[in-house]
Image 1: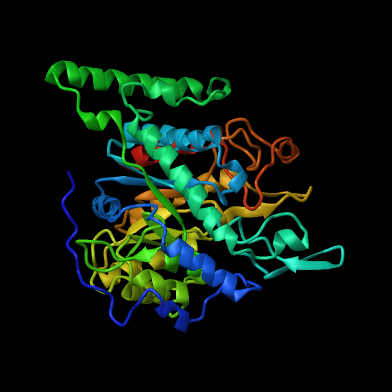
Image 2: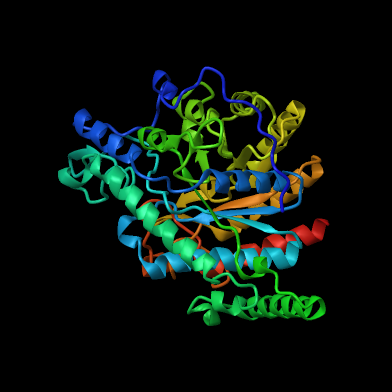
Length: 456
């Protein structure tokens, strides 16, 4: 059982609509305001996707992670697609996170807090509002929540009906994940059930099976000695997250609930604010500061220590435990110069945070053959530097934030199979950002364990 996080107070001068008085970046432009308003009213009448007690449970566990008692693993697709709301795809996403958490649980010897970057990751920020191809200019693709990826007028026009479709697909995904977890899909007695169909072909298969067998044997040993079968060993807590980008959607899902004070964003357990929308006086921070959920904030190039201090004061003025997750995404080439100052600035405030590393977004590059990719060596380098820098500055890296998939894709270069630029064409499926495949994700988990042990 986790000790409850003490409630603080409702945010001052805040309502679920107060963000509308602020500058809102990265928002879609809808051609019919009345149609948008109708979709939002319909959305407000629908049941929540998550519950307030699940949110408070997550906040309690993040508070423990802030004290070094847990490690947070957050991962999933860069952008979910409605067309990929399929049993095998959802199950494989869950499997790869469970496999990674199994490795970390075994190696770090502390509980792993699992947060899926799915069941709502349908909106994406873009560098430009419009895109031009062969002289034709159309709105940029902003994720299935807003419009479609096909380069046609009909597909790219923002459509309010997609808000309700996103809700439905999120609900279906959540229902399936809950069913898998509650039905014993994550049973520690049988970690071998978590294998993906092609794991046998991975260079890491032998190491993973050794870890699986070790945990299974340990569980059975404890049960033999105690004569009891703890129910917690047959299921795991699993939480959802997404970037809280589309403010009308997030506002419609922000509500009061019976027997609780304040407001909760009931679209996800852990919403986060991206680097492009993390302005301290902006609309996204305004909406997030008033909800009782734990909130993630991306921290990246261009942010100063003072910027982060101002964000903490705005989001967490009462220094509530479990409230803030800072996700640094600096890049392997920049982290050594930029992270120490950010850590020192946060320490100076005394505000409790959970630092986690996003080694994906700061390491994006384009190959000579035109593919957007990330090199596994750079991803690994950023994580390992992050662990060292936190340790040397009296801090602790408490988690990872990854874009990954359980599918057999070739989108990131390197890893155990040494994928090259020429391999990308084999199975490059992402519509936005490149993801780690199952082998690369498992390899990274093992390398994180190895690095932590080297400095312990």
